[in-house]
Image (tube, rainbow over all chains, first blue to last red; front, side, top):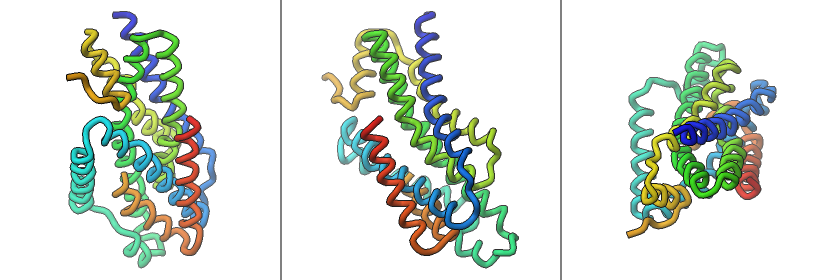
Length: 215
Length: 40
């Protein structure tokens, strides 16, 4: 029991530190308002595109199938499209007309909501990473620590991509750190819910590393 | 994430500064993301 708590704490620490360090790095950047902010927002988008195309979608195909991955992709777009319609916010074309600052608050709110949506995606993506840490620890202590360290490093760009729109949306430094840290929390939570039986452990391990499940 | 990128981040980047800045930022972000994924 104590071992599970200890490994869970290591998982939480790996998750929070990874995305949190990414958020911390962004806090040192001076955003300005024109070209600098434009560059950083686009770079944040670029990081998210590479993470989606090189990690999330291949993982989805490996864990399930192309059909399930395509269905998930479509469902994600539909959910965000509906949220986009339902949640009140202003698009850039409208903001252009309000250069005097009338729409400034709405624009920053839109950037914050973009950062939070990215954070939700990252948090969901972090669940299998927690299983990977738990499964690796169950196999060997040193391997578990190595996987936790790798996952923490791997989460840094994800934290950066989330923190840029939040910071551009004028969220306070403390809240940016808190939000990026929270996005990493599922790494630890996923592990803590892992059952201890060998069969479950093997299933978790195969799921986390994208291997096909045993019959 | 792709939806948020195409619907929010890129239009917002274009709003902040038109011209080459958003394009350069996007390319740098993709390259940085790929490098970080490969290295880490």
